[in-house]
Structures are given as structure tokens and as C-alpha cells.
Length: 346
Image (cartoon, rainbow, N blue to C red; front, side):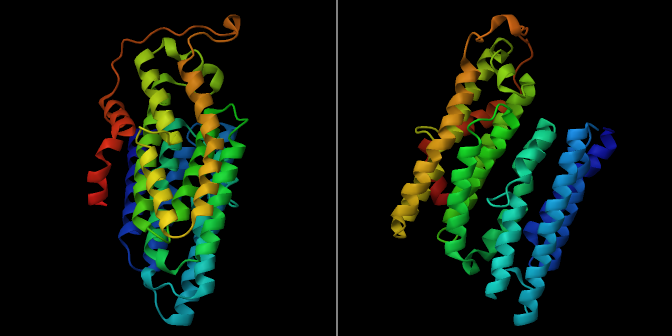
């Protein structure tokens, strides 16, 4: 893609995100979401492969439907209350429609079907933007309206997302699809605590974004897209693969890594809110996603592929690991001891 065009699209993404997260009026928030959708479409379809075009079409249709629902819910609320302020969403029907719209924007179950397909059809760098930056504006809207939303509906969506995100990722061989289902599962953890402690939702999102960015950048460096190529990638950059193993275990939420921090705090908060059954259920469901993270981690560090004749060993690169990956990996793995400091900031 032309560098100037690329720059325009990235700048538009930043503009759309900034407009949405800094607006008080529903129309401005909707405008930011629309700018975001239109800016990411060329980045998804830039390879001109039929799968990429299909992914861009699916993304456009679902996001357009979700944006229309956001507009409809805000208009319904304005009709009944005379308020266009985002924090003044008080009408029950508007809250219900908005929850559905944001669930569609984020890819929460039962509106998750588009996300794995779109991620599979996108390049790794675009997949990274879709998994992290594109989820920030909808998360901000959820954060601002959290006091008005229906707790039962959100808890149901959260538990279903954790279940299906884990379940459907089990038999995948494409890494981008596995990361898509991992994202759906993490969104379940964010949604379940939103009503009770919205700041925990944001903390979970930030840490998830850091860990996912590390995984995507590492895969982009080693040019790995499938489990079969991941098996032989260790020859290319052994130290990078070792760090990828730790980052994947951190994404799974294993102590003493960073990913354990949000899960620990969410379970603690749910127990305080007399929601021990929900906390137990979502913890058990996270074991499903733990299985495919362990599978990925096993493939990352295995030293011999099962069928040596079918795979060519890759040459080891002398290119040094980028500073961004080094910093992100450190944060993804070693942040748990700093949790008291993080809690005082949050």
C-alpha cells in the first residue's frame, strides 16, 4: 500500500478513536465510530486476496448495523428523556439496544461470528489493530454508560463469551482464529465486572491489549500464521520464541505472570458483590482457553516437528529483536509484583 495512503488511514483511526473517547454527545461518539470503521476497511482489504475482501465486507456490514443500533438507542433515549448526553442514558429500552450494539461492535457472544472470520482474512498488523485499538471506543462507551446497563444481561453475555471463546478455540489450527477466540473469552471477563467496578474492566482491557500486541508483533517478526509453521519457527529466533511462550502463558492468566492480575482482581470483586457462583463458573470456563494457550505454548517451544520430512528448517536471523517487543514482553510477563502500585493508580 502507498505510504501516504497508509498514513492517512492510521491518522483517521486515531482521529475517530479520539473523537469517540472524548465526546459527551451521542452524535459525536457515533461519528467517531463511523470514521474508525471506514479507516480500517482499506487496511483489511489491502492484500486484494478474496478472503481479505470477504473479511472487509463482513466487517463493514456488522459495524454498520452496530452503528445504526447505537444511533437508534441514543435517539430513543433522547425522545423519552430529552437528553443527548452519553452518561444520561436512562431509558431501559435504549440501554438494551445499546448493550446489543456494543456487543456487536466488540464481538461479544452472541454477536461474535464476524470476528474470527475478519481476523483470519486480515494481515497480522491489521489484526493487531482490530484486536486492540478498535475495541477502545466501544469499551469507552460501555464505561461511560455502565451505571445504566442491565447486570443480568451483561453477566449472561460475559459467561457465554467466556464459554464459547474457550470452546470454539479448541480445534483451531490457524493462529489468528485462536487469538480471535482468545479475545472473545477475555471480553467475557471485562463484561462481567463492568457494572460493579468499571475501572477493573479498563485495567483488564489495557493489560489484554499489551499482551496481545506482544503476541501479534512476535508472530509478525517470525512470519508465523499456522500451528504447523509455529512448530519450526524456533530455529529462526529461539530467544523470541521463549518470550512468546511466557506471553502466551500470561494471556492464559497463570500466576506469577501479568495476566493473572486482572483475573485475580475480578474474582475478588465478584466475591465481594455476592456473585461467587458467577466467579466460579467463569473461572472454570477459563480452563477451556487455557488448553489452547498451552497448545500454542507447546508448539512454540517444541524443538523437533513431528514430521521432519514435511517441514524445512528456517535459517536463524541475526536481526536484533525490536525494542518495542522487548519492552512489551517485559510488561506482559513481569507486572504482577507491581500490582499494589497499579491498584493505587487505578
